[in-house]
Image (tube, rainbow, N blue to C red; front, side, top):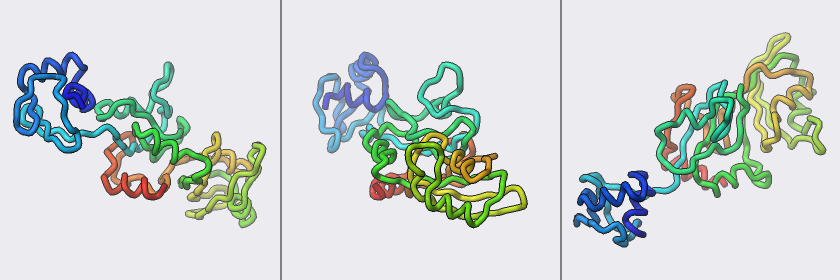
Length: 237
């Protein structure tokens, strides 16, 4: 790999900017100053430093975002604030959200530039489980739970695939559940609850695959996934 491409991939600047950095003698390869932008290096073996700081070559980035209500899940929008505006300083080129959460839905959102991982997570064939904390108006009977866990008619050509329901609390006219689904249909959770005679007051995704929302991560904040989280997520798929 050319040295100038390496530095561009590391987001040290544009191609012209990193060439100036190199010509000024600010970059070393294996402890030797290199002043030629077209210098060839092995990004997996050679040690590159910029102003004395070692640079580890990395092109794929993974972030956990605690999405708040009021922002849309998109990279750009002409009318609404987007989730990407919550990560202004995140490293990595071409980052995007994996899947969608409605504007009023909160919770776990994976942000990455790993297209292969995103494709696998969203593939209908993979049946990746997604768990939601759901506060609802209405009544939750045993029959309603059976319906959700067997598949319900939400107006599509086919019933939803079987879900898992964990009852958290229940009163006369409201209830709270954790609902795990293995699909990603449009407004699916809200439509499933509507199909059993209820309405959703609050919706929050708490996990996707084997990745769970960090309870210590404030709403509207993000953090990089740990190496262990990345490894386990890829192993899960």
